[in-house]
Image (cartoon, rainbow, N blue to C red):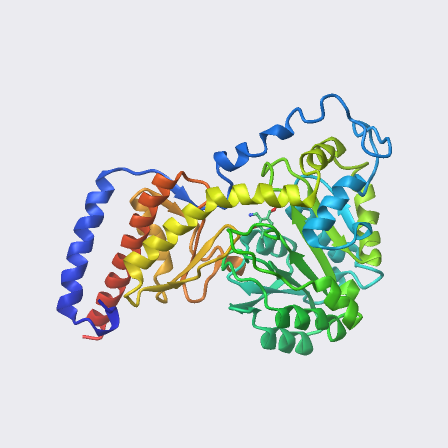
Length: 428
Ligand code: PMP
């Protein structure tokens, strides 16, 4: 049925059926969670050989005793791993602690307090702002919110952020000092930026404030679900456009090995790396090199890592298929929402009819299915259309996901029909 063409009586009848189905489900007192993009236990098990892999041999190539202090930029072998993941030269990589989010936070602080590569610190500007492609990753937005950096939403399309708008804002406002990008299998839309988008982003350094930085968070660089999608090299594009200082790239093994105990990487021009190191050396004597060594022994070659990612994909793919099947079977013939079919990453992004997302999340919660709060994918937690919901299929076992998705589809229908009925009532 199409909700737009349904009569009041048809809607009322439909609402009755859906409500009674919903009440039956509520009796089951479910307790399911599809909120955060965490790897499942089965995925984490894939990397358990990390533990014990060193067999008391703590010496890295070159003789470094990894148990001791030092080595601010990380072990060469770990930097090589980061270089492979980001497809950049090893000299341009720092291998750090367990979290790329920490590195990003640190990089924003560096720009804010001290400025990159001799540029004005952002805190000295009247109203420094980041461009935030939406829907996006809530933790990026929280960093800006905490530091009082303004945020300007930029809608995503199937090529990446709307570049006409990005360029327009940058031309009009010299206090735009950053943009958040998740260029491959974007969180949450699953989109990979097109070559043209990468090229246009690389040109921004020619028109932006010299302190402007692209935060290229390549968190899903190697997280294909089967079919490989390629991403153009932002490094190569900035080299051609003479804008190498405008980009900071990030990645980690969080969703490759153990999510809380991996290795994170940042890659940038030497001027940017110097700025980062200046601050890092005050914060730490060096990263956890023992863990870095474990990772380089576990992933001896980049091909080993890619093979490992295929095992992740074998676990993840059926879960994505489950989500997409429920959406297709339950909603494809209707005008109740749109969704993406990602080829990798960790999420499926779903857009309800305008003004329904909060209601769907609430109905689902009351039926025992926890979803990411509506609005979380927008700066300040406010989705102006109240429509985006991020579905994270990775963590729950398949059977639980299956149940959670039937509840989700039911809640989408119920919230949409109730909203339409209310609109028709008001219109008399
Ligand atoms: N960036 C994105 C886009 C993510 O989705 C995540 C994990 N949800 C992270 C960064 C966090 O990465 P890390 O574990 O390396 O801090």
